Length: 168
Image (cartoon, rainbow, N blue to C red; front, side, top):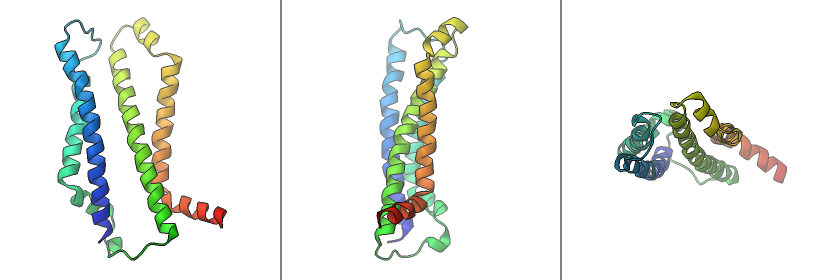
């Protein structure tokens, strides 16, 4: 099998994770629509976007995984795969670990964007009381999580080289 096939499988797995995230957020949309006592300081579009955008992206990723994978993998590298050595296995493992961390850090980032959107529409006193120092620190840490997981994914081969040199 070619690398594009393996990457298209990973794209579909990521689509499943995004679909679960969107479905989880759609519960909030239903709650806001049905509960008349729900006090909103921001427009409904924030709730809808937080549920609809992951679902739309998941559908697109699910429908076109091979096309997406073909655009990511350079044509020169899209050849039959030979049996892998330990460095290649470690690179794949690190990239998968980075993808796992990226997924959960993007879920956290979506939560904090929603949180920020909800409380940024109110008056200054109300907004500042809900955006505590702890919430702000969590937002910053989430940004670092996204950056670190992207770094792991993009530099998986370099990390594998470093780890193997340290072990041997």
